[in-house]
Length: 178
Image (tube, rainbow, N blue to C red; front, side, top):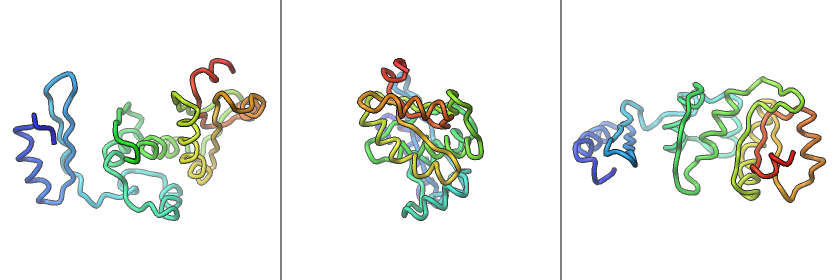
């Protein structure tokens, strides 16, 4: 909790005693605090609206409970609202946007050269890491993905786009080149 959250600190402590998850976000531009009230600590991926096939795949992978960033963002992301999530490495950001994306796209097909989703990454390494998380899960909802980045075969990337790949994870430079 932010040290600037004077009024919200006591409320947050009280809610935590009642076994509610408490998320306090302090705006960077203004001294405004937001408290996410009413969500129980034991919230599940099902409660958040994640596709059942994805939940089963998560369970198989040993992922039973959503991380805080997933609890905070999945309902709005699945509903199609814009979100902004920030967290440390390993906090669950990739699954936060990836699960929402795959839940929204489940059962849809992409037309040639018209992906359904574009995930932009600043580096090839990060694009590949994102793909490593998304690719196995996306197959459970009949989607596939393609990394479009420098240092990888142009022809494979173009062929995938021509076939109609639903999810493209790309770096800006290579995307412009194609």
